[in-house]
Structures are given as C-alpha cells and as structure tokens.
Length: 267
Image (cartoon, rainbow, N blue to C red; front, side, top):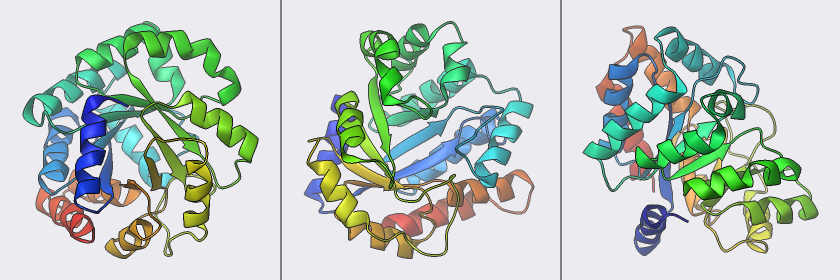
C-alpha cells in the first residue's frame, strides 16, 4: 500500500469509520469543470478520489458512467490529460490519495503501460485499478506495474470463487475493491445483501483494506455499507449523475458538494 493510502485508511480507522471514496470521470464535463468537481468532493469530505480514465467502450459501466466518459472524450480528454488533471488536484490537496480507475486499452496504448504508470506516479497518482485485467494475465503486466512504483487495486465480485479470490488478492498491494453487485456500475434502490460474509472471506486472503462499491447511491446505503465492517465505501454513479446535471446547467457545484457532504456525515 502507498504510504498516503496507508495513512488515509489508518486515520479513518482511528475515527472508527470507513473511508469515503468518491468516483468521478476525469474530464467530465470538461477539464476545468472536472477540476472544480474534484475540489468540491474533497472539500465535502471525500477521503480518496477515484479518477475514471474515459474510454469509448466502457463495458463494466452503466449508463451514467458511459455518458460521463462520452462527455469527457468529446471535450478532448485523453489519458495524458488525466495525469495533468491529477497533478493539479494533488498540488491543491496533497494529503488526498488518488486512484486511477481504468480499462487497459487507453493506457496501454498511450506509450505503454509501464511509461504511463510511471508518469502517473510522478503526477500524484497513488494506485491503479485495471478494470479488465484477469488474474491469469497479471504476470504479463506485473513488471510494468511494479517497476513504476504505482500500487494495484483488484476487483473481487460476488461470484468469485475462493481459489480465484486467493489469486486476485495476491496481485493487489493497495486495497481490495469488493463489487457488491453483479453487472455494471449504477445506482440501485437497495443495498446488496451478504456483503459482511463476503468481506470476511476476502480477509482470509489479505491484510489489505477492503472497500465496497457498485450501487451505493445514498446516505442510507453508506450507513448499511459501513455496518458490514469494510474499510472504505465507494460512491460513483450517484455523484456522476450530479455532475451530469451540472454539465447541462440543471445542477450546481453546491449540489454536488452537499450530496457528498451528506454521504460523509452518514459515516
């Protein structure tokens, strides 16, 4: 785990609460307003920010995140501009860990994965979550990732068997992200069931923090997630929806900030 991530999770644990992890799509709706959104979620109490690298074929994402990626790409966002954005965020908020949430294609074809990850570290990124990297292929990319100094977040799904879970956990050195629902990202009406049991099973195979996400969309969901004993709670699509309203002039930065503040207060 990066020292900044370790400090963040330790601080949250000392306050007897999980970390609030806010996901935003980098460059949505454009570079400058995305920077303002990042400021807003951090000022509202987000402990960690996940920056989504916009991609034209985001298979794991629901409608909200797909539209966000489209807006970002149309505004001219590229994987390299994501790093410029990260640098500006980190300069203003040096104690806030930043995690890249990305598919392999956009970063692997931006000069190579090793170079991109190395530059990401130089620009303030603490960890990377490669969405579409199966454990059996991790060894192909391990040298590039490890040599760059960036840390790795790994996804574990509700359907992941124990042997595969063990393999996945061995590839991570930042934290484990438990996807509490099958399917794509997006808001849900109810918090998922069986999360506590799955988190306890994951803890058999790792000492790293375990966070939960996918479908967490309200303060009530955050409260339910925190009750499962996780180390962090990820809220994505619900924030992205607020950014969408902001992009179309139907919402404001204050509304984004107030929403994230309500999530933080629930912890």
